[in-house]
Length: 211
Image: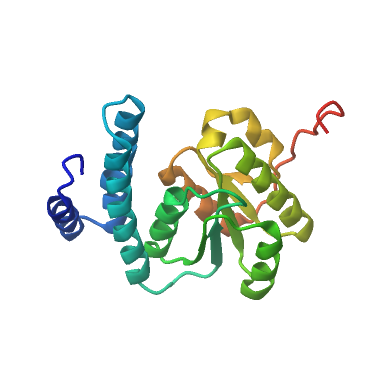
């Protein structure tokens, strides 16, 4: 990807998917590769064009894999989305792909789903679990509003994303289940949530100073 060699990059992915399970390739090759290129960009060792090239290639492959995933064979329906103004979709798309290949019926809504649009979607789809990811502080605030609404509605809610990894204190403010700092952990926690359906953890109240 750093050499803009699309055919070579596609050949590497095709070979990997022919040798290993899709979940393994997604976690060990696609995800780690994008993280590495992102680190190089942050260190000024790769350009934004190189990062965009790799991201576009990965996004095409992920969308194809999600479409080609086998039909669900497990009970329960999962909805995956980003809150309002969140446009970083790799994490929820990676998660959707892995969940589908593990047999879950997964509805992927993508980026920037405001609460008012989500309400009607929930009423129609009736998911057993809703998952949202936020990468930035202001989109974590949007995610909080969704979590608050779903708690009142009695809908099981889980969340994750870079901002909650970087600022762990935020987790105590969200009335939902934190899925962990990695995709592997998230999948294990989702299995537990759908099997046990625990109540949302208690959240720390916001002081009057910040309300």
